Image (tube, rainbow over all chains, first blue to last red; front, side, top):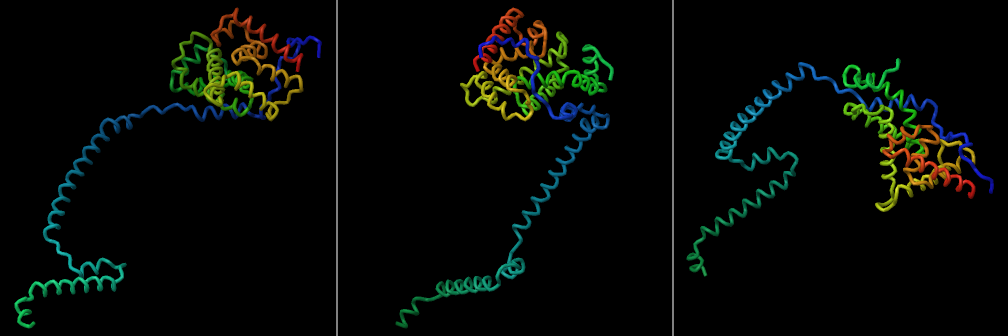
Length: 129
Length: 182
């Protein structure tokens, strides 16, 4: 193609298109993302400046009071509580009772053996032999 | 909706009660111009839609700081140009790829673009434009398609009128050479 081309003689318009109704939708999309922040009301200012700090102080005092009471109770529990095997059984509802009995029996037998060994007089054994 | 001066719109924007109304006016007056300016840079409708929305969000966030030393629409055009360039930068495949290479790659998408119904010569013109350096292409678009005056373009791009005139003449020659030989 040798002829001279002068783009000033073109229509000077692009052939880009947009979907129908696009610019109405665009405006709406932009507006959704750009909102005026609400002016704080007198109530919200009061809440922020007075009520919220007051509530924070009350909460801290309540927490400290409860923490002190709880410590005393724990100390009492540690010195006086004596959990028996029957107590354990009562709590462990889901545990296989046979296993518990087996454990208790085994422990009891071992305790008896240890006791006997402690009590046994080796002098008697010498005489028997 | 009546027409307001830029000064009036800025005053309305500063007032919480009339801020939304002022912004609506600004969108109405500028969204199409901004969109087409962006579209000619990024080519794709979907991309232009995203960049246009980002542009107006920036307008919303920064208009209260705008000193009024230029027209609002000139200021919006500047934001739109910067947002378009930022968009192209994000499309770089790696750190070393230039904006011009990114722009040139856009021509591959032109055939697949649903919202372009130009004939063969118009498609070739767009491809020719994409061979120009990006900023030269933007300046050319503003003069050739948007029919803006050189001093307006100078204000938006921060380039002197003389440089813009030389730039336009050079760009026109390159495009005509491309069309003649392709």
